[in-house]
Length: 219
Image (cartoon, rainbow, N blue to C red; front, side):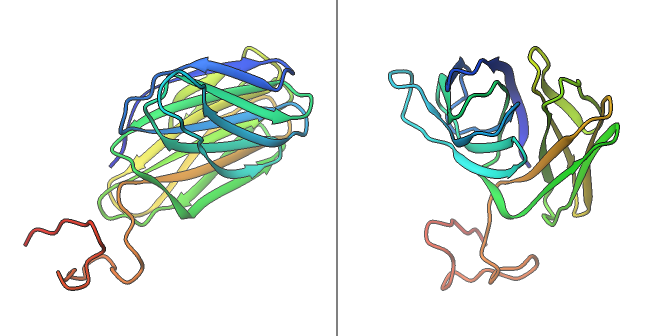
């Protein structure tokens, strides 16, 4: 199961290029959440030229003005670009032991109450880790109550927090924070270490004749 290593939080003005130094160890996995205070488009995150290997992160779920990105590590400066006039609050966390995000198991939620929350039902018998981003454009700070707070950017009007939670067997996992009531959004993704096709279900024996290319098998 994946485990957190460290992370960072920062913010930027309306200039559509914000960067920050954060060194993600080679081989680790990185997750970003961005909260804007106005509608934007063409949002992307990539490594800054000349500071480590070239790397453009994969766009994950989006809800409202809250965005998620993820990918492999090994970079020093990360640049956030977008089209439109907006401020952005950004959080990032670095995880070891993760190689991918589940493409079929994610969740989003939105609301207006003083409790922001979402959950996922996990299915990995070897242990599960979910990562949640919560954001609002009202300037109301989040306080984690379920899950572990890793990063929280509260220096600018858009606010964003990153939490994670884990279990050792399949089941429901949630992340929850309290805040002064306002419009809020939540994104949850599940980190994975190895994803086999549906042909290979838990408990089935994987034969050497039909194993996926590159997968080492020990009897």
